[in-house]
Amino acid sequence: MSLIKRMRDITVATLNERLEKAEDPVRLIDQFLWSTREEIIQAERLYQQYAGHTNHLRNQWLQAEQQKDKREQQAMTALKAGEEQVARMALQEKALHDERATQYKTLYEQSKQNVDELEDQLQELRSEYQAVYDKREYYAARMESLRLQQRLNARYNNQVPGGSPSGMFRRLDDRISDMELEAGSLRDLRRAGQQFINEASASMQSLQSTIEQELQQLKRKLEKEG
Image (tube, rainbow, N blue to C red; front, side, top):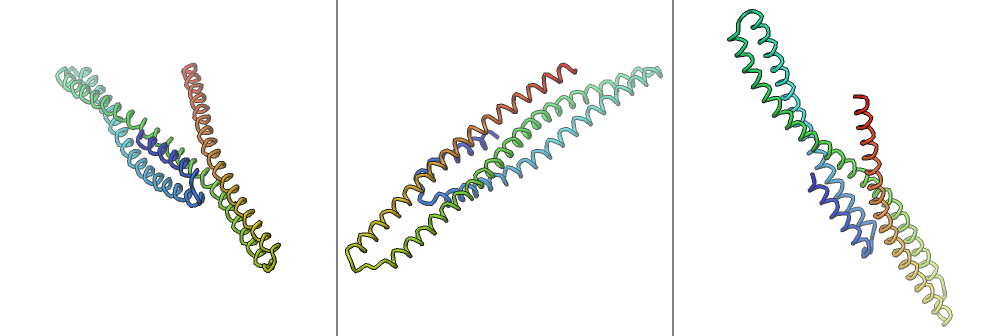
């Protein structure tokens, strides 16, 4: 499961770096979303397999516990009936089931811990995907506004008479202004992408810290009630 975490760190770092140089940030974000969606699908499959395996281990553990209790009752019944040898055999079987229960319980607890960790990482992936998707829609709208503005400016330029020096310099001025507007907008977009990545990272760290504090409070409450 730690491998998934490392893969996500690398992916986010790569996105952050490439946004700084991207000519089309929306397209780059789309690639990131597609990659994240594929990882979510794979993680969900792994989660289902792990959860099924964990349930199997739990059933094996509980069955062994039941058999252990059953053999103990049989031993007591045999002793009451004066069948000491039968009681001894029942206790031997109880010891075997006790060992089996301990083994499966250990496996179950380890598997359950891994399932819980994978579930947390799945939730993190889903939250990250949704947050990036929401920002993607905003960036796409800004890029479309810029594109339409450029078309409007181009249409206006075509209507300006070009036979005089004033018309020539007017078109040149408009063209330079458009280029400055485009460069400034892309720069703002990249800065917004960087800010978003930083804010998302800080938000996730704060959320994890809050959850950990609440978990510790619940544990202390259980200890007092117990």
